Image (cartoon, rainbow, N blue to C red; front, side):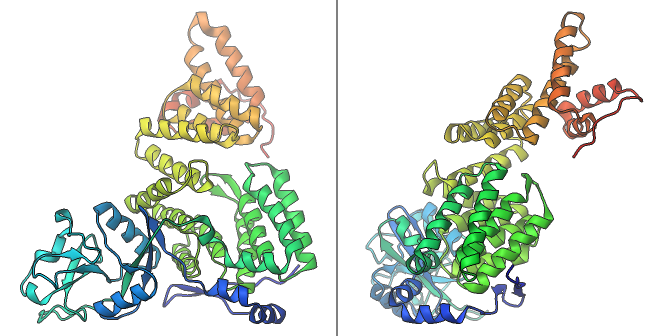
Length: 499
């Protein structure tokens, strides 16, 4: 097994840096491959909205110089026409690492007080914000995005004339281009290199990725994927995409449920991803996966640093929005997280992995905030998109049992989950629902036999009664069932060992 290298976090700048240890042959290949060099040097767009693509450039220049450079790049300084567009751009700017002040294409230099966009549209009255505030407006002719939801005017070089608190630096500018982004604009440059230079290994890699993409808890798929990837590495110890994919294998192996993970598997996943980054320092997709591990282990500073690098090296923006949303979510910044999830829903196809991930996270938020009707619709939407996904049915069953108080619905959905894949959490949920039916019926003479039937079914499905009691006791709606079940146990009852 190839020796793993530990990642080094540079706290001063929150930039996740790795020592460059790329193989000499790989470096030689890079220098000799003009096509790859062109791919790696291609500037990425930072997002798209309503028929426009955007790129943030962080360079302290005057407004006129920013305008000139934007036109040389094939676009123009951005014209932000609605509040919704501004809100989106604030999210994108956040992905770039902060809330830097940036020039936009807004000016009243032709007619004092009549602010217009350089694309010849007037400034929406609802978006004037701070522009009409303060003295000496005749000396302020150029607009920029504020750190919050506003624009402010400055003079040509970014100063507020004779402002008592001094001038604030304008740190960059925002370019817009015509047209929505296509999927090809987000093709991984690392993948492009290995596909061109190691076709046979890359074909095998795609087989492993297909197994990982279709995984819904099936252990065998992870075993098969790992065998393929280890075979690739055995032939080519510097094949970075295989190490990244092995990180995904162990990331998935770590999963217990939505909030519990196996630390040993996450550690191994982190090692494989670190190795991929050692081989390819600009591996944006590996940084995304690494951030996910840091989020799960509550290493939020490292997660932010990994996402900054992912953005720096041109990661898929939808993946960035998801990861950034998850980080904000875990940090308790729920409203900001929701904005990222909602953008993913608006920007991706309904059957895509991005859409499902965002929908799942929003539904979980609705459950936590007791918006149960909305959460119910969210679960139904997930079922509609993935009708053959056992976990989707199982998660819906848990929601119906513990939150929505629909016991019969929970039994139906849990049975459906088990019919697709017989896994532990679905059996646990089904047994809890069956015991809840038992508790509701057992004290009525006309339903005693029916209650006994539910009890026996639950025992056969999940015989670990103490585990059932612990689960039922977590929720107010099922605590009475937990108490009734505890009373039904005798001192002589012996249970199987829970493995």
